[in-house]
Image (cartoon, rainbow, N blue to C red; front, top):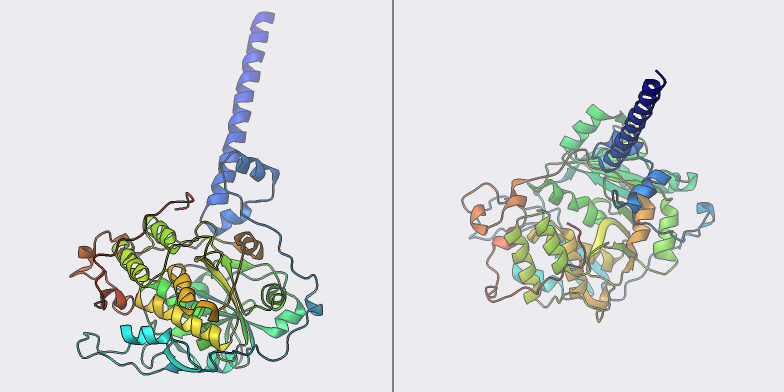
Length: 455
């Protein structure tokens, strides 16, 4: 009996130990899954500062956010706001084309939001003069109209935190650590389309004030009706890039992507990235890439747009003199992390934003491919501060999208797949289908050396 009892006890201990280890393993697997999950509720359960998460990161099972401290001031109430606007020495007056000129040979009968910009007009727009008139979206009849109640509201907004959600891919995330001073100073404007507004009403709390304005927490929802593009990602570039056109009274703006939760007071952000260094435009450096050609390669691998159209986009830039990034360049990188843009709305910065948007309108909606090119064309006239990517990750909490974005054009591998099909966009990227005034067949793109495993 003693022998049987001892053997049974040993078995019991072994079985209990195995079950305990299985429970720990299941808990660890659930922790990893929740931290990487695209479901907001599950990802919110993940404590990324815990010892367990740190241990899993050390083992290579999860990726910890790439963060470093940002040297912001401690007290928003003590920030001294500069008086007046930064003067521009080159561009004194900037006007915008508002009526579309539809070419006789164009199959397009209605105006385009970004206009039928010709190659000659595009080239002229890069030649800086004291008085300039350029395409900058918002062509009459091209779409993206605001409600009168929103037009009236934004006229009072000189300091803006702007964001946007299109096609219901996100829900608004409420900023934290916002001072009373900043709540009074800043307008928090969330630009949405009809699909997103409906999604928010069904999955959140949209309140309406006495004047007809719609709110989700601190965010004032600004509805854009009649979307100008077929592709939701391209529609999202309207409030992101040409913010000054949507909110013309704004002197300063901070753009953040819809999936971001702001965790730093916006007044501290302006002081740190603009006023302290006497900058007027600040943007984060991309985490992985410095050359637009490497970024284009990553976009193709990750199926972010039609591969042959990305190649054509890059061939045009390479033909026009855009070299791959090297340490000999004046900029620390040609590729930004476009989820945050901090700017004073000076004439030169507004011009840059217009030209950047025109590239997105003409070519692919991947704005990170166009930023460095426009900066290259404007040269020393456009000065910007590109700060380390790790600081960008300390300004926000990144939330997953409510669902994965995918459109048929992103899977196109050959240009023939776009012919005689409904895959080609009808209102954006038309520059890629307009005969370029030079022979691009002989253009060979530079060889890509993949410096990271991203994508």
